[in-house]
Image: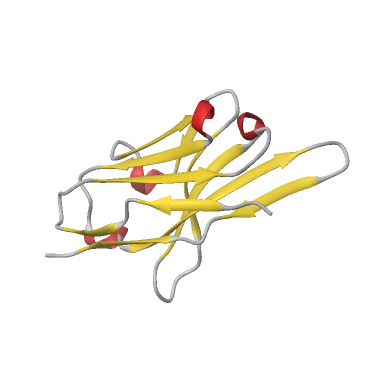
Length: 119
């Protein structure tokens, strides 16, 4: 049973910052591609950022220059540092871990953490 502990969400004013954390009870964590998704009310879930096992990162256009994804393989944790937050960043943010082998795909999700950007 894979478990995630997501933390760091909350209420912040526009222009503020938050740092999300996701600790995963995964074997071979270092082999997983880790992603952050978000879902706003009434909208589809969308990819925010990902970080590959080798450390390469990728960001959605709407967060480039404001969000930074990173990982700590020694502690099975992925982070999302968010600055210059906007009201449109308000959403539930989900951590995702994915790994492929020749015979199987491993795909796990966290429970989500609420981020609200409002004055």
